[in-house]
Length: 221
Image (cartoon, rainbow, N blue to C red; front, side):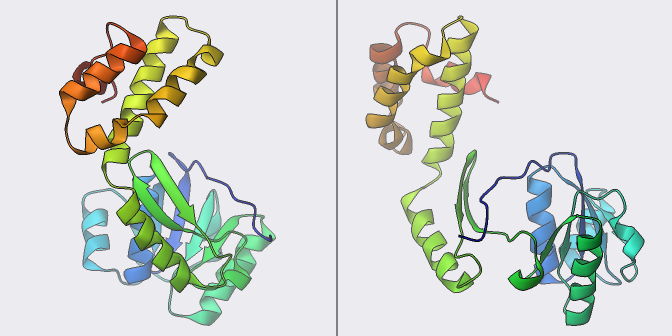
């Protein structure tokens, strides 16, 4: 295995995207969704990027790429249709040990981006190590059918329960059997079908008083 799987925390980190086309747009949106501070460098941009620049969500440098654009950045993504420019970005980034991804060119990246299934805090990453992005896309579509939006609610509930247990000074190790019971139950299916009475009954059986579904979900907002 060539690649070391890792999830990057880009919250409030400066990230650069070079290229304002459809690919660059997708990269910008994903970075924004993860809380990054995004700078776009491109002479032109899609309607969506113009909108994001207009409302201050991103910084848009309306010009061609300069090596100095890499200064102070945490990572850079090259998403232009100029092969020579993309490779230059990779070379410049490598010189200063900067994280660099070039769209659809794994041979000049020091990290690659997986195909993602996103359900709130549940993030499933699929990678073929650059061998077949089409197969990764097929797997993503299959997993999207298997893991619906109910998993986002399920994880919100798990987080709220864990937070409440910890606030009551329970030892973290003592929670293991509780979560194993919740996970092995039909809780996900109950959430999917909005069976709140059944959810509360299950929570009471496992956790006792004070663990009602709606009140727990409010604390996680």
